[in-house]
Length: 359
Image 1 (cartoon, rainbow, N blue to C red):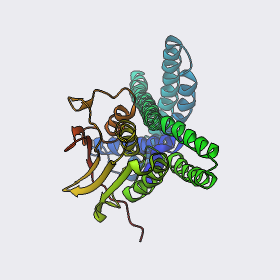
Image 2 (cartoon, rainbow, N blue to C red):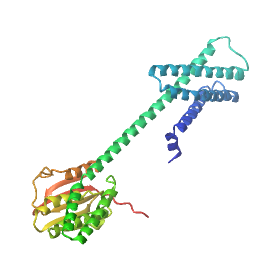
Image 3 (spheres, rainbow, N blue to C red):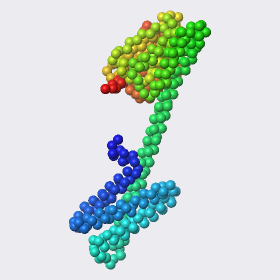
Image 4 (tube, rainbow, N blue to C red):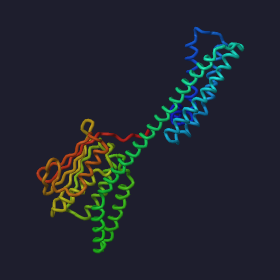
């Protein structure tokens, strides 16, 4: 973090920086404006002395204004005006002393309005200082409110994505536990034990990976293989899986658990309906700047209207679409088509983003 960033993030540093720069700027502008009046070192000394006095007398205003902000608008206005007037009066007296006693060596004008004019000028300067103070404070408050609103929106967005992700698991978990229970009743303890181990590894992967983050496709495929091994215990020879993952895709980043609901959907509506020969084909390839993912089955098919399955009553495909929308906005494609010769094919297109390699 740079020094300037630290300054702007600290109210204390920000105040002293702007406070000092403001009065330094006042001295510079005053000197340039009166350059033709006098260029002697004594005049420069008076200008610096007046600027330093202004720097000192306006410091208490910060603490007065800070307390005044907690008052009602009318009381706050009264306190601010009174504090500004008293501060301007004190500064005007100091300036008069500096000017007439030091610069003019004791000469004082007979006209009283010369002193009054100096007080008016001081009021204008103190008013500008106060205006800048409240302006910066209000700007900081607005920025903080925007940051809080953005943080709240981001947290809600992440919670929404997590909700969508975690809605996808209950059906699978219920079916798997039923299958394990059946294996135990049939005394197939070794198979049940292997199934419990695979389920444990799969659930660990599912819960450990943040649905907000993306994971390498190779990691996602590893989890899918665990899932499909569990399902193969249920369906035995009725389920065959074909993998066609291009090596160039293995480091591509994908939303965690984005394909599992598609496979679960294919098993539920295709493989479970078939007595034999059920097949699921999973493919991935790079095309230009996009990653193309396909999940197809050879089941009895379904009615597809406007890219949607008419049989879809759950949250699976809807949640996937919403997750992709949340993560990629409009830079994705999600379509449901008829597979040839039979079945359903789901296609996904997302930006091809590669995992960063550690050197």
